[in-house]
Amino acid sequence: MIGFMGAMISNLAFVFRNIFSKKGMKGKSVSVMNYYACLSMMSLLIVTPFANSVEGPQMWADGWQNDVSKSDQTLSSG
Picture (tube, rainbow, N blue to C red):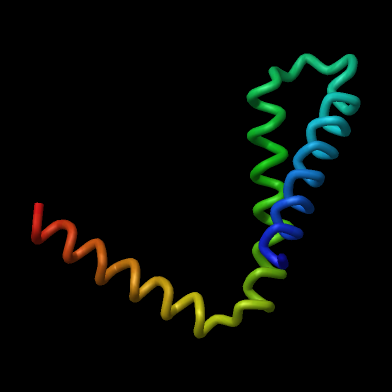
């Protein structure tokens, strides 16, 4: 149930993002793709400190090590 609620909140956030970004583009000469790209980069910069504080640096390091070890296995098998 928690996963479903998280997915619904995510969907709602994307809908609001699209609505407000289209309202913000009125009268601007920026293309839609560039506007969404800038919006995505800004949201990454805003959310990263919160994600790091919630997950903790140790979990990020463990995840990085896990991904590196999997990529080594993939490269050696291919």
